[in-house]
Image 1 (tube, rainbow, N blue to C red):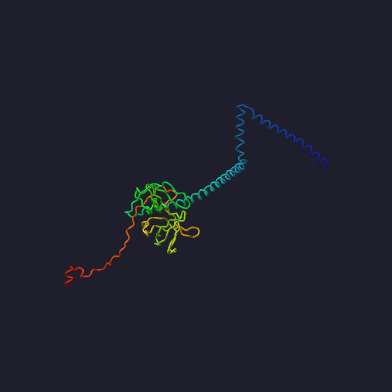
Image 2 (cartoon, rainbow, N blue to C red):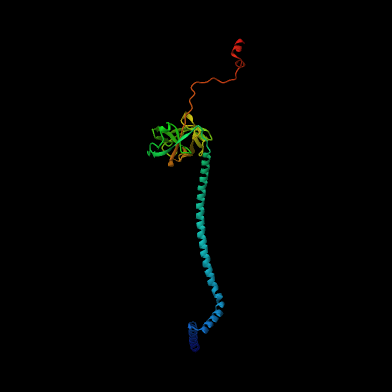
Length: 300
């Protein structure tokens, strides 16, 4: 047994050495062929490449599949990122859509308010807002119109859309307007469409409170609030704002006038009708005797 193993080792060792020598010679020959700069050798290399490379396509299949897999993964990653961006953009578009709907509704309300026709007898004087009182306890503005323009205490001031306040103090060239938000302001109003009467009282907040409401169940947020004309202070039908509810459940008025941008105010000339002091007679159908002359009625 030991003799057979020794003979086998004697045969394999020379063969291994011969094989290694042949491989080295082949590699050396390939290196020399690839390094020789000759037209003939160049044609020989081209023929070898044309003969060997097409037959190596089977070896490139796994590499090509791996490359395609990597590309597909990168494409999927890009699609995922684009999907996230589209989702985020869709959320932003929904927010813009909601804002657009609110602006559309507000525009429709303003267009509806612009169709309101006041009494043609109500003329107005436009004044420029000169200054704001800036006091937290008294909210008023100063106009550049006064007695020389015929301004009278108590007249209503509007910004073109809604009621702003009333004249309270007139000088030769200036007039002061007490705003609806001032604590001393109290305006009789009518809530539409229910027709409920109430008193809109300021409390130095942007939204005056609704007081002395007859039936709260008939009033809903969004109802229109206009002046009632009671007491002869303001003409009836001047827009004040809309009903809103604060977090505590108290009804307030969201004013239609833009109090943050008061630049020009319209002072309405309003002379209340003279009160009826003497009662009149009851109007009834005339008797036949009343149609005859006085003398004939006396003879009869």
